[in-house]
Structure formats: C-alpha cells, structure tokens
Image (cartoon, rainbow, N blue to C red):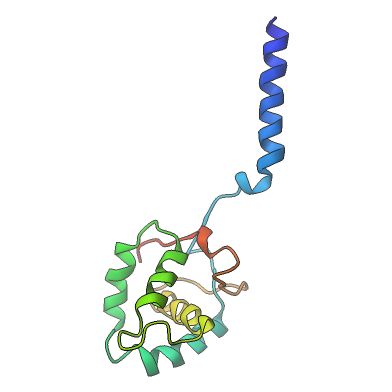
Length: 131
C-alpha cells in the first residue's frame, strides 16, 4: 500500500514537471537583469526628447517606477502606450514606446544588456523594481 501511494505521488510530480516544462522552474527577470539594449536607449532618448520631455522630466519617472514596483514591465508599456502622448495616445510606433521605456529605465540606473526589449517576447515576465 505504501509503495502504491509513493508511486502515485511520484507519477503526479513527474507529470506536472513534464507538462509545465522548464518554464515553471524559471524565475521572472527584473529590470536589473539587462533586459534592453544600448541601441534602444539611444533611440528612446531621441523619441523621449521630441515627444515626452516637454511634460515629463526624469524625476517624474523615478516616482512612477516606484508605484509600479513588482509589477510586470508589460503593464507599464501598455499603460504608456494607451495614454501617451496625452494629446494623441497610441500615436507612436510600438518600437518607439519600447525604446522610450528602455531610455527611462537606463536614466533611472538600470543596466543595458544584449537582448532587445520586446513586448511580444517575455516582457510580461520582467518585473519592475524600484530605482
């Protein structure tokens, strides 16, 4: 009887592992993990300076990032895309919104990396942490 119970429990754990795969074991990244590139920061600065800087300085974003602490970066991206620029929300290209976020993160001390930030490729698993 004990062996049957152990076998059932072992089988259940094995099945869960096989079904969930390695992604279940992977931990979420944070914005401290180099989740955007230096090229995105450069492009983001150009867009930010021409579109965002008139209304928002970097102090604004330090407080904003604190309010998004431990939330997925994708949620911030969606919020900015849906509300900015205030006079024409959603008017930028999707890459421009992404690059602006990379610039904001960089200006708040978060490191660049080798992987391009992409809302369609795991941005929902990158968590914001307070600067």
